[in-house]
Length: 382
Image (cartoon, rainbow, N blue to C red; front, side):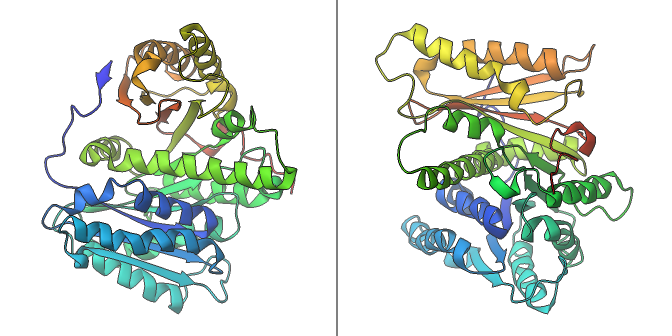
């Protein structure tokens, strides 16, 4: 078992994000909310740029609130205000994912702040693969960024969130299948692949099922909306927290190994606040619940049976009372037996103490997937 925080980046690594549509805005919000990004900005020569792109302003409001509060947080730590940029582009007439003058101007401003950094950077372009705005624009925006001369020290990485079974009309939409077609072809191309940092497909079914397992009270419509909101925020927080963790050393390592490729970034939730098992209850109850949800990983992974890869990396987060070593051993058995190619021993695990006593989860990174490895591909009812 490898303890997290043993790897340190040789120099600061800047992380920037463009969020497209409602889901993309949540990834911007996550990076602003979780608090780790300003730890990077204390270093001389760092910058942080974030941009939200959508057809309306409704889904920008929460992220914009966090963006406004971010400036006082920077000031409280003596961080110069000019290291940070937050912008919105409200598209009045998006045309089939094209980058028009309105968006081009926003991307130019964003790129200028990225280029001010004196250290290597990763730009994430995040969206829902099942939505209309993000799924249709993510490749074009990445390609436009590449044209803006960001430099050799900047990598562009895509983040595409898959739908879950509670997403209604968006669940396994035709837009998702089309987006996976385009992204798979882009990452498989020898030339003109803008995702030099790789493209991460993020499934949400495990987190959705974990939340749904106990959320049964209240007005159905309100409950549904709340569950979708919590699932999206948990998944986005988990991804962005990983991206900036340990001075972005885990991100840097993955880019070196999987840059340009289509990769799976699974988030498996094992326990959730206030349900099933409470503090002070018998250890055996905790163990049974955690073991149950670890065993569900293959079922909710979003990968077809038979998929194998050369390496597996997992980051486990749990409270100190949850016996994280036992959890890692259980999870390793599941992941190695289901996903690691025969003869390969490339399994890396990192454990982290989580601040919430009742929450535990794992980030599971499986590199070099293809669209046909995904259960969601081609399953559209549209």
